[in-house]
Image 1: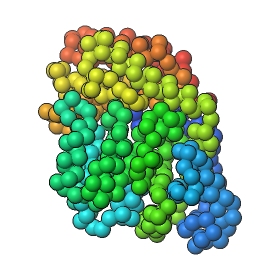
Image 2: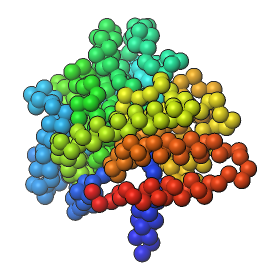
Image 3: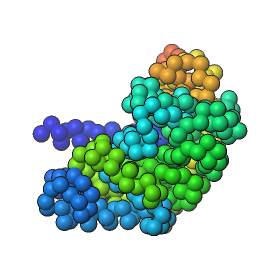
Length: 408
Ligand SMILES: Cc1ncc(COP(=O)(O)O)c(C=O)c1O
């Protein structure tokens, strides 16, 4: 059967290559079992105790169990916070939040896509940019947030909502400073912690929950759960968020994914998870320092979290070419714009590297050193006649074959 062949081929690809895509990870067997379970068969429009279909006794328990665990993962009190575990993914979660808090055309402030923001933070090709009036802040030329500058912009623009959070920002976010800006103009504050949720859950990144009105996260990145998202909101906003998710935006929740989120939250409450997140950061920092020692440039000079941005603007080609040669030898990355980008977003000057996936496989310092060496060699090989790509490919194969993917 062809679908089995697809799974086999993709399994082989995932085993034999090294994934440095910062938003990817390997969910556990238990998470995969939950997502592939018979809960996929059930329709459950509505919320626990208020469903539009019969037969949801067990489903109600699943959803309550997952919500409970979600709040516990982030240390949130039930009398202050609510969580909605139904969003299909990060993009609809953001949409639901905007629908709950804003009216069409309202002003919102968020990080520019080319400086590390997300499409759903108001890019003009996204629903968000079409429905709401987004103004964007950026990072300074050094790649760091300039909080005074962002505060100035907030005062000038008086947004109804300020969005913090990023897809490609390697430094800690000072949520308290964003709160101050939001208070000065009477705005709501949303933290999109899709990338750093695992680090926050493990207490390794300053917590956003002391400051924000709403926070959302995808569950499939550092959190290492199934594809999906959850929204945390202060109690007074919860009814509006719930209404915006269902029936505002979605139909029946994917109960199999909700169960998978619950499994991932249980895993996130273990000491092993905290140790894992520590290693994710250590690996990113070590990879960054090794690349720097080899003469490569890192935006902001390093990282506080799970990702780093390689600045290749002094190289002969755009990052697309380097992404391709890295893929050719088995190192999977994504090209990315960098602050002050001079090239086009389709072929920018940066490469984003993340360590969540390789750390899940058990890789550590020795492997980061080797990976930095291989990346540097591959970048150096571009444009050289007769360069021995086969040698690098073999080294990647040997390295990845030592670290299993599927049997955690
Ligand atoms: C910061 C951030 N927000 C939202 C999303 C959207 O998530 P999804 O791809 O699940 O829709 C992403 C995904 O990359 C993201 O990085």
